[in-house]
Image (cartoon, rainbow, N blue to C red; front, side, top):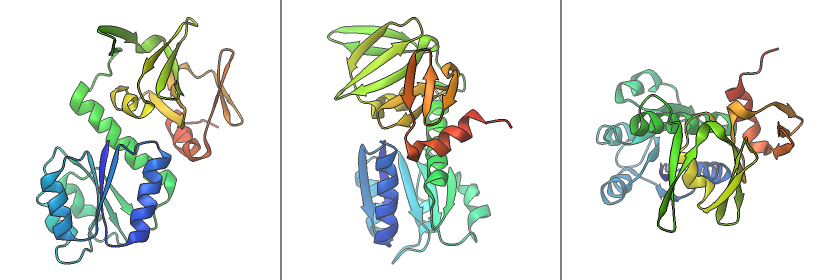
Length: 229
């Protein structure tokens, strides 16, 4: 995904960029520190997600919001909740109040991905994806896929029948095409939530495999699996 951060506070920009990198979503991160610069970035470049502060020099965030098409996912970042209710008239994805905690930020990114899947794949989750490899196109049945592991520039696909295959592809790009039941739980692992047997400490158990859960991903995982007491 390509991100644009629009905020005149360099500390906030650095924080958001750091959060994006923690989630492994750093295809492109651009920063605009005022309204006119934001408009130039939006005009000259293509973005998937815009983090937009409302209180900006020269041109405020609301004015910029009125120029953004529905194709862009907008997340408001603000120190105030005054515009929260009105913002949803502009179809924003989420409204984050500063200071922004990482678990709350992760939920906003999860919303963006879910919307992307619905817009590009339809409301019904795909049962397979197709990968190109050396002139051939191979079908990957997602119902049989337990987890994906990063191995350098390659991704290793591990299936419930104990088979595996490796393809030249990053987890970052894969995460865009996978349905919502697949979740990144570590910088090197994406898991099928429906294939989780149990969680022991900081490890996900799938048969004889133990998948590590990164500290920065644990809150989102707990939210997604909806733990019952």
